[in-house]
Image (tube, rainbow, N blue to C red):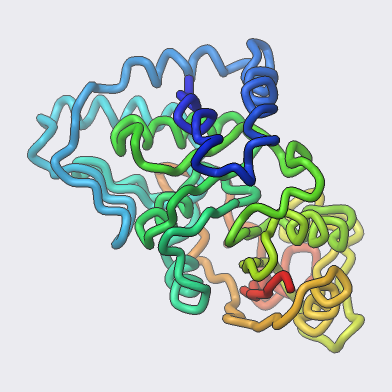
Length: 325
């Protein structure tokens, strides 16, 4: 379904990845085995039947914008929309394909705008994106000059969405979404110039262990870009939801900013800086025709939007950058 051979063949170009790249074909093959997901054969057939067209335009700097509207006739564009909606739900985006607007649940472009100017320039950098979803941010990272982006996400639907976009962007753009979790990374990799972890930390049972894994992936002097839910409070304050948080399962710990900075210090990071703290609004996360399930407005208290339906503070997210010494 996905051609990873160009990535597997970069051992000489990235000797620091050689050990892991040697393991990757087996890891990927195991993750894509038939039966891993009941709809996997359907997605594969869908991807094999996408229209064969080379776009006149690929703009990853200002968005994920591929082709012009007049490059596909209306009936073929409608058919493409029907095909891509079979990969519902589309969470991260938006994407623009030949004038077709994939209006995703998240305005991920807004989050990217909050991140891009405060991080170390990505020109020529080797980047790891943990929990990357369908690879939206990876395309934007390449648009900012990243030399190679490797994303990790074990959810095969997101891998299929990534491959659908890659079909039109082309095989040579160096953004890869691997069907793997962070557990697939070898210990002590110390290879990446920048590591992104956005929307992952609060889903980890042991957040300090996750931060240590991210540290181990960075070369000395490399940068972590961490985005996570936070709560108001002093150092040591952590919200531990009893069951769900904003209807999300597997939310284990939401720290205050001061606690988060303390966790980063304990994990060995230096020079941690808060880039942004922004409440999540129903304009940034919402239901659309490309994600018709419930979304943030359904997860907030109907009489007090500052609280979740469980009574916890409504979502606020922080972006922090830190360095490996």
